[in-house]
Length: 514
Image 1 (cartoon, rainbow, N blue to C red):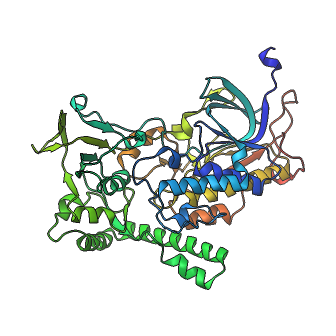
Image 2: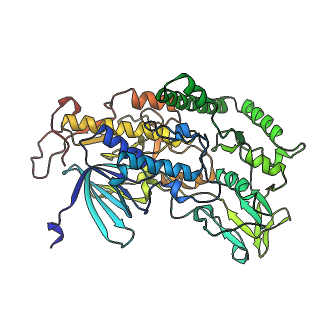
Image 3: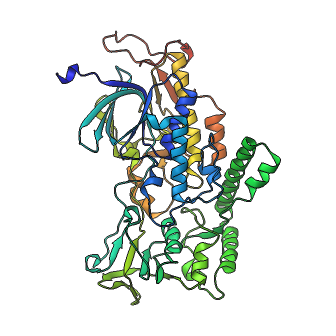
């Protein structure tokens, strides 16, 4: 049969990615847009995204679970800071209970998407990861829920002499199941959340663990169990208690972020006082826990119940602040002349970023240079029709923002469905809007990749606010119609070019094509 005779499947919505965001998107589509046909395309053979991929010891949330959990299915796992396996189980249970798991097509990696204006639909190409076969389909709306991490490869700097090291070298993103550190000298390179998680988790079994950092990170002890939710449950019905706890943590985190931005010296003093209480008397805080940047210029790290500080106090963990001269057969030689002996070196040196999972995007056959486009409300691309993406906060729980985006996308789809409109496009007609970096953190993994990502603008609705309250107002409490969002009905193939575009005010009563 000729290619032109093949029947190509059409979906109202195609979701890319079956992680925390993608499963949430599936629930919202079923709940808010029951008329819509949809499927979730996942490149790996399992759901969960980050929480399925990362298997290193101690992997856990770095946000409270009452905001990292879904609004529609509140977290009830007990601990505020949860282990990775518990988070994965929560995602899987959510998908199973809602039936979203039956909409997932595993082993389908979306590689390209081309928007056709005459058809008002996306032509999408996916690759089967098991066979390499190509799968073609079309959809009326494309919803990227891939996060922004590159899942197939972590970041590893070019260390001199690394090939000479005779011990075990491992990156947390590729943690081997059979790695045993019992009685071994372990060096963990890095000071981000992965290193802060790994070091106390390895300490009980290893002979000794050294956290080797080039520069310090802000770290604070937090309680692993939430004191708020049990109190709220005694006073309120279960659903109301969950909502209260979620809002409390969201506002508390936002308040701490704002205080860090406005009064950084005060926050530094508060954090330093906490370190003095947690660490042994006379510990060199200035060298090992006094960053060169202000709080929240980079993502903040937490130590549940002060586990890192307890391991340091017990003598099982050392922190060394220095730079690497080169690897040696027996360990690492530092720029200061010190040598760190090691049987195992863990390179917790960061992640690589990838927008939309690396898929190529084009409009009417012309490739879209993503790095030149601004983002509308941090969820759609300027000039690219019927495409949204779900990206969470850098200063709060990922899911807080993803919930808002999923709800907004469904409202957008519902508006077009009721009005008989087939296309929505974010268009900037304000010449005074200045493009700026989308990712504002100064972390190394952000600086390495920021130039490849879309931009934000200097004014609403192109500006990305790291604020749940501001986003709640703009995405939950406002309608989907504004000056920047253009709704239209492009002429169908074969129709007269004089057929006018239909604006939102027309309120036609035809559904999206299926």
